[in-house]
Structure formats: C-alpha cells, structure tokens
Image (cartoon, rainbow, N blue to C red; front, side, top):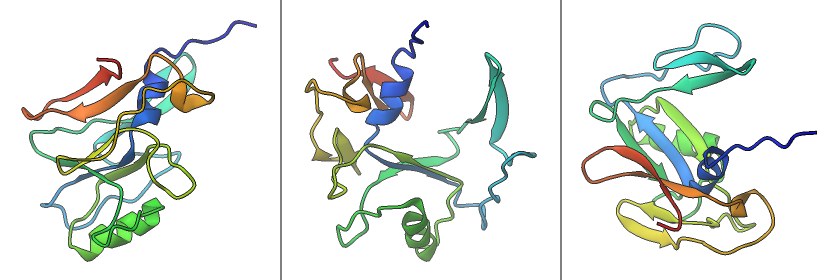
Length: 155
C-alpha cells in the first residue's frame, strides 16, 4: 500500500494554535450551517481526487480575521459553541469559525499562539510522536500588510 504524502498542508492546519474567526460587522446574522446542500457565501464545494471539500475564501481587505483562545477572564473557550456565545454577546456576528489548534489537557496550546500581537505560547520545534510533530510543519499568519501566508516553522 502506498503512503500518501500530504506535504505541509496537514501539519500547517494542525499547528494553528487557536480558534480562527472571520466576521462581517456589516452582517447582522451569520448564515446557517448547511451540510449536503447549497453552501452560504463565501463557501463552495470543491472536488479533488474524487473527494469533495468545503472551501471558504475570505477577502482580508473586506473581512476581519482573528485568533481567539480565551475569553476576557483568561479562561479558554474550550468549544466553538462557547466562543460563538461569547462573541455574539459582544455584538460581533461570526461568519466562519474553526478549531485551529492542538491543546494540552488544560486547554493550553501545544504550539505557537499569538493573540492581538502578544505571544501567549512559544513556537514548538520539538520532535515527538503524533500529528503535531510531523515535519515539515508550519505556521499560519496574517502579516502587518494584511496578507495571509504559511511559513515553515524552522524559518
């Protein structure tokens, strides 16, 4: 049986250390989640090698993206539901949210977490077992100029 190489895409997705969120302040209600039907903008189904994926494209010039791990009291959200309730209570509707990280039992991030420009958890370049340590791996970022990128962890 041939092993399938995923390149950096799988480890990069795993290395994200928090919940990533995009919201449209101009939109009062987020679109409903649709599984197996028409997807709300900005998402669409894309087929690749006989597998269908949901792909959502975000325009960083028009939409805001952020990384959120903990509430104002410092307690980790722990679930997308808890996060959604917290930001909805602040009047910020969420367009798209995802669990973007791997966490220890106490919900602290395993790898790099930078939240509002402040490093909360250091880059983890250790070797070990499991998905987190697959090499090469990388870090998702949005630079000061507002462009999204993925950088190899060793860089």
